[in-house]
Structures are given as C-alpha cells and as structure tokens.
Length: 242
Ligand code: DC
Image (cartoon, rainbow, N blue to C red; front, side, top):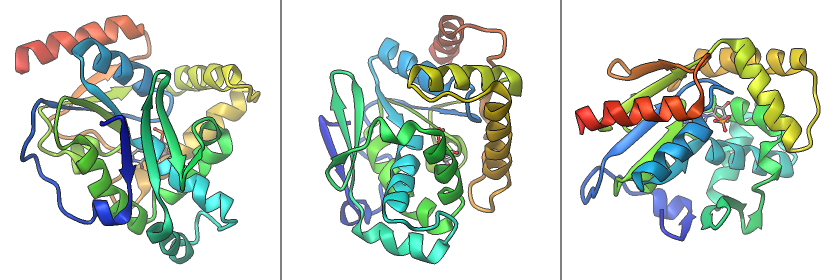
C-alpha cells in the first residue's frame, strides 16, 4: 500500500486483476479472535510484504453507518450511503490508520459495537460488492499478506498461498477479551464468547461470500500454538511453495 491509499467509489470502479503483480499474494482467513491480525502483521513484516486488513474496511463502513444513524441491517439505506463514502487507509509509523471521509477512526472502529455492526453490514451484498474492487486494487501489485473472511475464496481466488486459521471458541474469546481490555473495553468472558459465537454464525451463514476455507487453503489450528510458532510454520510452508 502506498503511504496514502485513498479509496473512493470512482477509483474502485474499474476491474483489477493480477496484471503488474510484483510479488506473491498470501491470504489469511478465519473467524473472529483466531489471531489473524497479529499473525498477518508479523508474517508481512518477516517477508517484507505489505499488510492488508480487510476487516478494517467493513469496520469503516459500519462506523459510517452508525455515525449516519442508519440501522446496519437496513440494506437499502446502507447501500445509498456507499457512493458518498471515502475510506482512506494511511500507512503510519504505528501501523495502518483508517480514515472515513477524512476523519481518523482508527481507535473507534475497534469497539464491540462496531464489531457487531461490521458483521451485520458485511452480510449486505451491496457492501461486499462495493468493497471487492477496493480490496483487489489494494492487493493487486502483490507482495501482500491480506487477512479477512473470504480472501481465499472470493477476493483473491488466484492467491499464491492461502491459509485458514481455526481455534476453539473459548480460546478465541479469551484472546479477544484481552485485546478489548487492553483498549479499555471491559466485558465478561461469557459476554465476549456469546458475541463471538453470534458473529461466527452470521459470518458463516450469509448468502454472499460466507466465512469458509478455500478448497486449496492450508488449515492451521492456533488453539495451542504461539504466534511465533505459527508464523515459522507459515514461512516454512511458503518457502516450499513459492
Ligand atoms: O476481521 P474483523 O473482526 O476486523 O472483521 C469485522 C467484520 O467484517 C467481520 O465480522 C466480518 C466482516 N468481514 C468480512 O465479511 N469479510 C472480510 N474479508 C473481512 C471482514
């Protein structure tokens, strides 16, 4: 990603394939709290690749929907907001910053409420359709580790290497609760686990591009493995394949 990637509907309107690709595309998909972000960031840094967090784009849409006081489940009104929305991913020293219509929402999109709304808006076909070329454009030049739910199956079906991470729900809930605590959001483990289960169900059951491993994805269970061990395992697999 360039230092400032401005994403608008106009720029995303043309189709982007893998022409001009300068490096591999590696996808990491999996459910909430499985460790995708930490692992994807570390893998990208080890390989010297860019990191593309596609969940941040759905969260940015959810932020706009809530800021506009629109019901995230109202397909028609949410769809109408999209052409007037500008999402910017900006590379900074502390990582990627997310701007919606020029406003920095990086911290605000990590709340439990936005997680919930992002999952709801992500089931709206118009939202997925609007974000598809944006994601493809962001990854088209290659040399990227992209993480999300449908990257191996829909966004980058031709990716050079695909991983799908899994972990037991109680392990994922504990990890997510710790992340939330670190960001100042306190909720009980039972609450976090309920939210995660509800989100998993919604993400797996939606009609368009549901959460699922690609047929050619390498499955890794992260329940009992540390981040370093998983990244090493991925690098070893990538070395044999690329
Ligand atoms: O990875 P995350 O928790 O930041 O994602 C937030 C929501 O966005 C998630 O519940 C489902 C949706 N999402 C998606 O549908 N497809 C993606 N590629 C990434 C995220």
